[in-house]
Image (tube, rainbow, N blue to C red; front, side, top):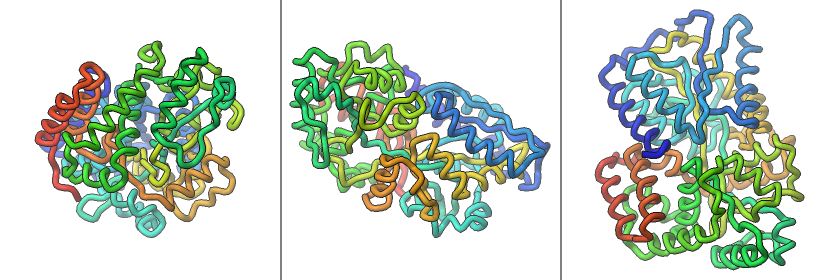
Length: 428
């Protein structure tokens, strides 16, 4: 079982355990010991800087509190989620922890593991300021259970302009299509360069690639059908997406399985490949590494997805039985402030989820991303456990792995149908 499958399974076990460990009896919001433990999976250069922006804001507003950084390394939280699951089963939750929007945070709320943070939303006017799709994604039964740090765009294709120029390939622009992308990959390969980098050591990168191909094929309406368990996994659109995905993989870096997601982006800027499909947390890492936008890297919406914003939204939640409940709510309050949202996005490469944040000081890429965030349909990621249940997320990883191994659309569909049956939850 790979790390992400373990993480998805751990989430399911955690939520089951939370229902029976008394988590529905919250500690008082005045409880505190002068400490705060913050668990996340942010350890790379840009991630650590972004987390530091949150911790700095909290420490400045709460100078008497010892804020402990409990970050656990592992792409997309694969290891942190497993460690968190063990702690929750042992009734030893951290005060606050990182998760994703949508079904991830709603699942914790359903089982009583995290507290209602309506007081934070009321104090900051967040109901009116937050992007509506993101607001819905952190609510259950009308109440919010977490505070987003910012939104990453998942459907992004990064490329190295110099590598493309040497291969005689025009830089992609708006309206880029999958068929053109495949032609360009073929030209890059013929020129003797690796066409498509992939951080296969972090399994989420390959699943993100398929997720983007699927969105390109079924569009926003099909995505909504999928989230509502109405997508035919044996239908022609899904088979078409699988064929395209298989075609793309023929151009993937032979060394992919030895690369983490950030190593893959570093290889791109070093000229070792032409393209990388990766959510734009890659942007923060590229800038942190000193890469120059427009010279060593550039970007375009993943082929066929220009009109959508596939959101990857990190959220912090407060444990229902936090030892330091007062400080936990204070930490979430600081996250919700416009100045903190802006400082975080500058480091992380994300965009603020609040209307009242002035993004004019962000980079040109981020300003463009923010414009799309507020104008395009905002959809939630399956790869990151937002759009579907943990059981379905695990099945999604299994199905992609099965297709890579077999190239059999029927086997892929069977995995997904089983996951839908195992993890069906009425959409909210």
